[in-house]
Amino acid sequence: MKLSILRQIISWSALAACAAVLVSSVNAQTTQTVTVTSTVPAVLSLGIDTNAVSIPFLAGDYSPSTGIATKVVAGANTLAVTSNKSWTVSLKANTAAFSFVPSAGDPDPAKPAGNFSYKVSTAGAYTAITTSNVAVKTGNKGGTATTGNTFVMDYQLTSNLSQDPPGTYTLAIVYTLTAP
Amino acid sequence: MKQKLTLLCAALTIGSGLAYAATNQTVTFTVTVPSVLELTTTSNSVGVNPPASAYNGSDAITTEALAAHQLAVRSNRAWIVSAKSNSASFAFTPANAGDTRTKPSTDLSVRKASGTYQGLTTTDFTLSTGTAGGVTHSGNTFAIDYKIATDITLDPPGSYSLDVVYTLTAP
Image 1 (cartoon, chains in turn yellow, brown):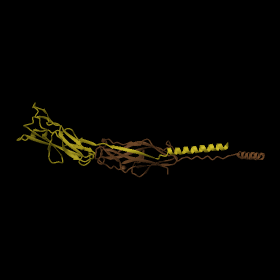
Image 2 (cartoon, helix red, strand yellow):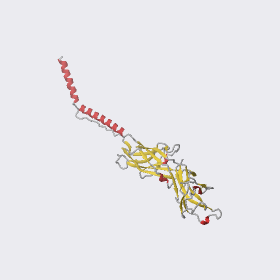
Image 3 (cartoon, chains in turn yellow, purple):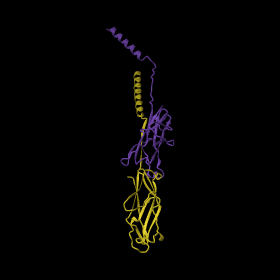
Image 4 (cartoon, helix red, strand yellow):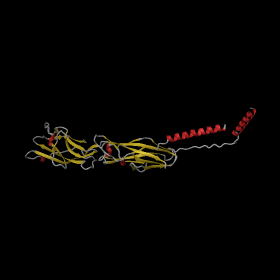
């Protein structure tokens, strides 16, 4: 009888030991791996200090002999690029001619967009604008504080008394930033 | 024949007498408590995604993922949780074909919530220590913060991944 009890105790002890081993296996994981993923977005931003530039002509600006006037607005716009790729800023006119609001009832002379010229302030010569994109400036990846990523534009506009009746002439020019 | 039967009965009587002779028995009960050492996490993946606008003020920024997940320890000994990077640099999947970048693992820092950030290398560092107990034991469950450094002059657009290995030991 007592031998039987002893056998049972031994059996239960063995079972408990097995259970203990099983629990130990379940709890054996002591490492965890966490995958950290970060997506850096395509950063491509073009900032401008103002979206409206005025170039008024005064009567005294015109040559008495030729009737031609040329006005320059240095530092008319400041553009700033933020990008994490090398970039290009292009410029074009939105239309082939200025829009015209006459002040004396004259017909629209369709003043050509090419009367407007531009250059980066540090560059030498002005370029007449067209409706096709032309690269104005290129630069390296970085923020606005990166050398070359903030730059100034100069504008030049010509007028001719024989071609431009009095009124207000408006032309939209479009800057486009790309990261090819 | 009769004598043989008598001798056999005597032998059986003696045998039975030996079986019931003791009045107490000692049973030794042994229980083995296993080494309990378990580390669990609420998540095995974390995303840290800075928006493009985050770079408006600076080329180089840091972005945090606070309490990104929790680690929980169950142990019947004092314990240490260590952390390391599984590789020296991030795996990079460029957004634009042809871009490459070997972004060092040290650009990712980790800390036990509200602690001090430490850049990840492939060498373990002690992230947290604690005492024996289950996951509800004070200090045995804690949140993990991450901070990643990115720089638009260095990091082309794309997805950067790094495996962080947490190891629980009971020295």
